[in-house]
Image (cartoon, rainbow, N blue to C red):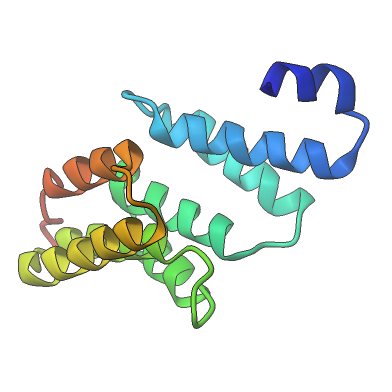
Length: 145
């Protein structure tokens, strides 16, 4: 389906935007995230489109989990709207930020909220968020926090 969209509808800006978001999602969901490619794709998206909660949450997640950049993560999380349009991913970013701070109880609370939002949105298990949880649970705290 994605190939069909790319082949026959790549002249439509809304389709290009959707394909770009899917590309970022695929990069962040991969087993081994290439930080440079992920950062490049997110930064390019920032330049070309109006930022939204999804982009801020992706940026925050990348910053915390893969770049271990707590300041960037905090800045992105602070810009997410209230209420967030992507609460699950926001909660994941907040959990990762708590882990970087060494605050395991807060990280666990954010992960439980993430799980609740995922379950409320669908009766089926979401393997992406299962994997996100596993990644966050392995984060070691920063030494200078």
